[in-house]
Image (cartoon, rainbow, N blue to C red; front, top):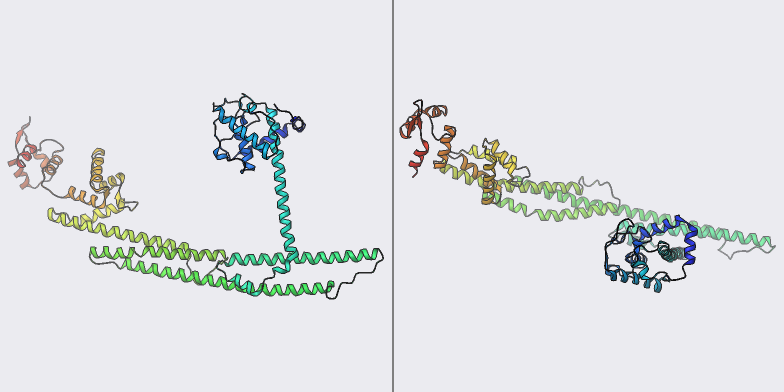
Length: 521
């Protein structure tokens, strides 16, 4: 340990435990922004040098480049063992902090590098004494900065005090400020200048009056001749000049207020023009969208052209937003020229945009229905009413209006149509549609239902139909066909063509599996 620290140690001893806690709190607050530093005591918390470097960097970032330091890990608690870190890193950081403190801050090196870095538990009082040197140094620095700020503020005040008449603004200057593109800020500046000039002028006049009275009192006290001011500089002359100035200021204030009212009125009209024009354009788009008709191909083209107008509306709405911002900055609240706000128009634009998207989706779906309808009319007796039912079902379960169905929506849609599958079969069908179409789109859904409901004569569909009549038995009985309400002619035909055998009670059992195999091979 180096000498020269006895005085500081004695000071800390005299101040007691509260001084130690206060110094620790000061260190914690100053190093809080540094995530690698966690000051909990005056011992192991300082053993890797980072806390010292952070303390210096917090007050004098020009002395240490903290980001380039070798960051070392470690727990800074006397109750938790430290994590082993590179010894050279700790030494290097600590040595840098000692050197910078001595060379630039005038803080003597009271400790050796080894005292902090190589000790299992550095001496608490020695470390606290050394850290106290930083506290005193930086406190002096803070006080100097405070004094500098006070002097700067006083100098500024004196500048206005000594030269306040020069800040008188002519009518032309006020007009120029009033007609700038940011009226609120410049007019507020103008008012602040006038107010400061008025306050300082009143203070100066009062000081002159007080000083004049004190001088006359002293002259009378010493029996001397009273002081007579030069012509035009008597207190009454000063009062008259001051009253004339106040009258001039009142006129100038009325002129400024009139210009402010004109500016506000201009801002109201500008916003109203933009907002009303935007509303009319938006209404025109809505009317055009509602008027779309004709063949599907023509409707698609019409809606596509309408959709191209949306970006221009978005640009126009941005101009409305800027005009509303100008009104807000100028404290313009009411507007008799329009009933709209930017929020209203933004909401209306969102509704129109959604309506266009829905119209496009509807037309696309109708085109797919048309294709499916033509396909079904060629292959079965599937009716347009069935296709309409399929479409309305899809729309109902497409909750998020993405024109696709997720698995749960797909299952519910089929169930509402009376089509029930096992979970395994349902997942298989869903995955197959996703594989074929990329998702369960409206087209995929319609085509699936067409396939399900069409009266095809494929072996698979006929086999499924027979199984339904037979109750999943590999054969049907006359009772099964009767319960299925098959026409008598159909029943008689099946009895003739289906291979049969008798069961134990002598009733015929008709083998539809063998018959279907023979028919389609």
